[in-house]
Image (cartoon, rainbow, N blue to C red; front, side, top):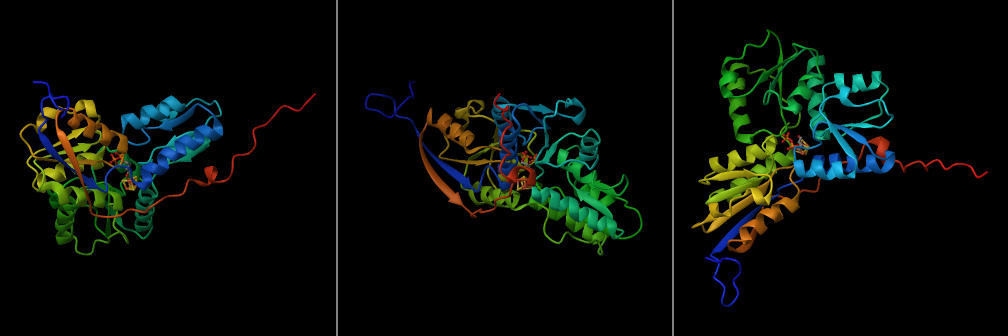
Length: 335
Ligand code: 0JX
Ligand code: SF4
């Protein structure tokens, strides 16, 4: 059956309500990280090296590659050609800027200021003699970066409530820190277990799970019960996006899927449904949400409703090296 348009003579598309969760998509840390790469290319010319995906989104990475960014996983892949290297939004262990300095590489740090805040708090607790329990996911670059702020053995990773129940930190004072993109509810459960076992454990002055993670999860919860399907736009290696998919199902939506692009979505998933929700991880640009809506429009007569649970006004400044106007490019003296 042709389902191309609701025009006279054409087959009528079934109606579909699309609930857009807000806030969704880019956070202030991602916006800043992308601006850093763009401005660095403008200021220093191509290539500009970026250690690790600047944010976990292929579309963003490929867009920056087209402008002159070259992505590498480790610093030793960066040649000594005088061009700068940028560290991703997720943060890096201290050994990385140290190695860059040792090689006299020009580096720019796109670590989100809210990740840096977690680094500084971990350092502060370590300096006052506490062992750190870091709640987070093993192998994630942010966890590697946070653990790498302190000497080996100063931090113990706790991945879930089960590990919280059995972890054996060294004797003495304890403090905790967390990854910024965790599930708010899972983290509360892990903390309940840890606090029961270690009642004197110190907490961060301000929550480590960031405002963007908290708001995106709250927005998904707000639409979950009204939706028969929730589509989260984001990458499988994007921790905060993966959490949104989980939150959707736990908050009462019968099914939630993660897609990176519109074409990845099988619109037939919405057959027979009346309401579908859409959200996007902090590293997913809005244009990809539009792609997903367009994909649904191919098969359905879509009406959009926005449900916004919080307004976000956070903006982060660029690093010092990019804030001053660029020096004039050297022009050969007239003969
Ligand atoms: O995998 P994460 O959610 O930490 O990163 P992503 O998807 O690139 O999101 C933006 C960066 C977040 C840093 O906290
Ligand atoms: Fe920063 Fe939060 Fe965005 Fe991560 S998700 S880049 S911590 S604002």
